[in-house]
Length: 137
Ligand SMILES: [Zn+2]
Image (tube, rainbow, N blue to C red; front, side, top):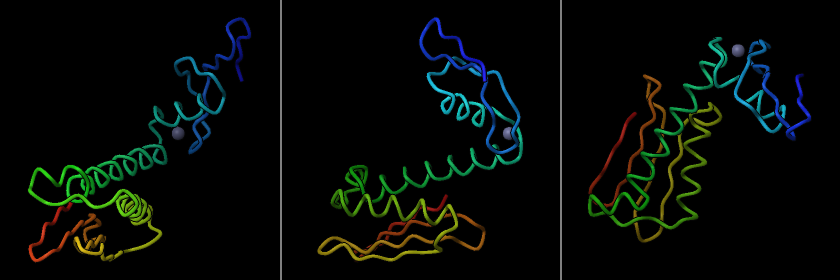
């Protein structure tokens, strides 16, 4: 753990949580922050998988926003309420992390939402209300 006390906290050596390798990273306020940067930069299998998962979750969250959030207005759909949107965002994260396989909910007066993992391992986001919209990524 390298610490330079002259300028407050500045940790420049982070440890990758996946392989334990120490990496020199840009200046960080805390050791934990330096460790996160190390995991973001490390090329080991665990860190690479974690980055890929993070990307997939971000893509899925973008898809939820596009189909159910404010973005749905672009296609002439009604955005769902913030609490329901939070629920769908949490559900899609749980699916990609492998905790659940699918979820199906009814948003009263608006639509039905279905999120599921396909056989290929893609996430499928469906909105149904007489007409259906599907995004698979
Ligand atoms: Zn690593």
